[in-house]
Length: 440
Image 1: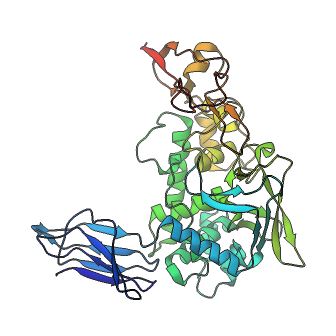
Image 2 (image 1 turned 90 degrees about the vertical axis):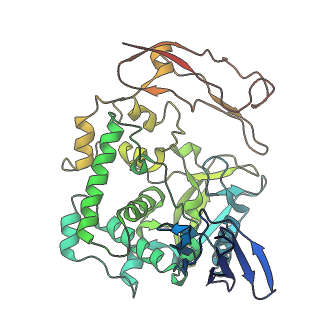
């Protein structure tokens, strides 16, 4: 007794807490079968609490008593990854999206969802109805979305272009509608968090150019957020939506900056020759966006990747995609980290981010192996997954700054000693790297 019960969108009932000296249990009741199923426990046992169903179908559990009065809150996620994926796939099928020889499942390398080839003989075929695309035109045609005033657009222009701001706010608007949004099946498969520098709570990159870029962008986005003066989302929500647009949108001739459900599950690669998919165009007769395959050989089980906006400057690549620096020495992100003169300053001179980067290029990182040997290792990751080609590249580094000098680095093998790692000698597909430093 003294528990809370909430009816979920699917008709099931979530029962949380209660008294048997305050419980932390949670159970789902299915009225169609008359059965109970245990689910994840509450973090804190509680009774006399409240439970509210949010627009997205999740349940917010707040307050209550556990010896003392509780002032904490917990969020119950009503759907599993599998349920989200089923809902998204059904949505695609309901709107006649063509996705042959393609599967959607959790990404092995990056987490979240990704696209995979299901055939070595037949190429993937992806055609997406334009009705599913989310663009600034979608925002303008919406009957429920109220765009910012011209005055706000004009004041925000020095920080963010009008099209990106419009789409960022529209995405947040649709997310706030929960299951009532046409795009709900798509929105609920988008990443909920990011590990990119913009979202770091700790200053891992302090005293580097990345840190100053991050702080400048946060400040700029904070100023835009204050101009909007929203009531339904926080600054962190705004940064989330801004990053979604910056990292997942495509530039289309007919729609300009656009979120493309399904297509944006293909992860980003730095070079065009690494991509297995590319956007082609909108077929005017069928009103479908067609994705075509590149010349890269595709085997069953291969993850399908795409090169997103080719015109992104390097500072944007760092902030949108870096996070876990899964980059090679020849990649522009790596070059920017170590301070190589490779940043494309093609933006207007008034651009705040560009100016800040130029002013702080001396605050760079050093790579231990490059510093000691004059070159990065030949490879640090050697793997061969079934149905895919061998991967043998350098992905791991020891970056440092400050008053340190590299005394020695762990010697690595010149060539792989087996068909693939891990093996009896190497417990991981990544080689162990190590360095000894001396304080100056």
